[in-house]
Length: 468
Image (cartoon, rainbow, N blue to C red; front, side, top):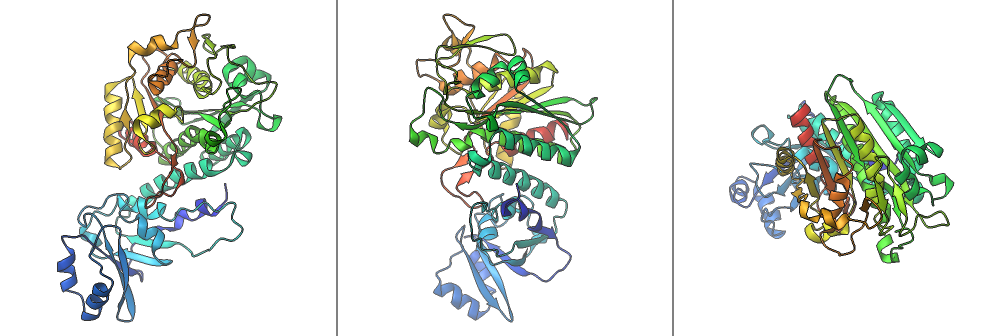
């Protein structure tokens, strides 16, 4: 990916060495009156005329002698969260800035929002306003690479998800993993064609109806010292989901370019792992397919044989993500990893239950679930644990096969899908599954409408705590 959105990120934050910069004064409702009393009469008059009260999310640029300053309202000027500077990162004119009094403010978490506030997806625009970046100087030098790494991974997820299926099919996902592998000297192996049909039969069956240029494949990347604990990261790579023969209505297809959002999250998390040099043996797996319609489509009522050997009756061809993940999770488990994490835009039921902002998280181990929840709260990337409830396993029963891929009763769709995946993860393996939306239907500061990473930083927090 070479569009502006990925190129803007590295130049947004630099160490403060006394460079010339416009000061940003952060205030909240409690501190605004005291700050205002110390300002010159001209500034007080300008603020009064604009009815500026220091409310969170508001800002003004004021003349300050021959220069200018920025006053910005935040929720709490003494404790800055990750999104408090995001609006400024987007709204201020291009230039160089520093936080006034930054030596007494814990600004490190806010650096992420400053960088992400400048994200743009301009790949298909003929005319792009090149304003230049807004550069923030900070004394928190150690926090800069951390913030830029997380911003870069998030931007990568956004870029991959925002790109339409014509330009982000299985071949392009393969290219994205290959590019990541070259940067970090990782080994990439791709299985497709006859070998895919033999070794990953469910991936093959789901993707075989697509055009040859978008042929299905299993993409695997391995990195790190083989002596280190093994970590598997799996991402659903359904690059477009028509629903197959159980065809979606046109309105439901509009966002299906994002059905590879799980793969995007997995790639972004793998990038963070390798950039940080975590002491793990990383195994990234992306089953990449297009669920298309043609004479080669798999059918309702078909029985598919999986890599693990389990047979799966197809109750609905639109429940294809769990099929390709089943083969990928089987492959991941064969090397006995200490932890498997998978991401998937898997069920509409998870969105009905939790809405677009809150990924449904399933985990076998209570300690892993608690660590993920705590990590998400710490970085304002919340996740919500859902149950792997044993009583619903009967929903997956088939009259003629080991499993049915789609219960017909309409109950507990996200739980049933997670229980289906659970059958393909080796018993006793620590495993966490994210059913994420990978999309923001409405913009927030630093989080524009479109593809987004939801649950990525929570998972990263877990991995840093466990392997960092």
